[in-house]
Image (cartoon, rainbow, N blue to C red):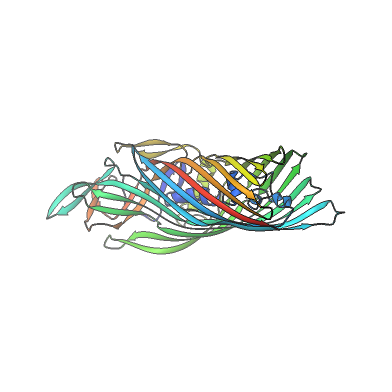
Length: 494
């Protein structure tokens, strides 16, 4: 069924949620709730698994007690080359897109203070670490001629029956996210390391969501942009963390860290489409603010330091709460707010996230050889949705990992310690697969060939004019995402 566009639309996906905020569901999990903000080459080449080892500027973001492990001052900077490739497959046809970005992925430092020899506190250290990650994500999905809508238009005084055929879709997100961590740590008798940190996070992104229709007989086309897009979003967040590392003996270390929920303030500038008295599309640019709380995280770590030459670390991070938006209350007509519907969706379909990481390092004189593996579960439950099949027939479609899929990380790297100076290099390959849900919801034509077509309205059993669509059936493509990241860190110990 297609209806004229309205200001508020709803779509069922396991639970009711705000259709125009479908991308918000993905961003909430991927941008705001994620913990991986990049870091040093050493940290990344061990898949971010250093929670019980510490002694690295990026490791303090996992467990601030790692700040207390330092016995000298240390400063470092990291160059990050981040590559992203998406393959979107729809009914056997696929499009692939790839892109690379290079930026300063990390910079940080620690100042180490050795205490009085009579004190059980051997060192008290103050550290900061700033890291960034790229948010660019472009997904292009091919068309399917079986998915089409009945239309009529006038051609030389003759009414022509035709079809608008779905001819492809694109989702485009650009931007960056960052985390500034400031931590204080102490070393108690070289047996217990304590730490506390503050995290100041930011995210800047822009995104659009549109598809193309083509008149089956004439070949003319029109582009339809999702209601409330394109939009820009600027956000800042804050969290606090505490941790402890205990040296059980010379070979075994255990660590525990807790990061509070992150409290985000989001400001969005979006485009809203409507109609004038002549039934033509008009639009306005508006701002809105939201408050979001993302999950508290608990990290358990264990490390085996077999010798001065070899160490292996295991981290397990569990999200112990769920994302939640501040609800401003229902609309005057009694309809629930978008935030309320988002919260309902997260309450029913969001899982407590889990992340397992394993990292190891082997030393030979000044050389360092590192490797790591990570497995992060999908944050969303399997569910079902009304979607088209390959023949253009709508029906129930089972979703497996919607929006954000299970992610596997393989990592490795090399380093060399020149005593005062060191240089490290690392590489990561992160792969995931997920169901890409689109097309359902409200759209407005933003570019066409000038043809005035009448869309068939099933509820009225008639053709009506209008440049807006309400698609109550979605399309689902299979996405395989591969991120290939390179890191080079240079540092100085003093």
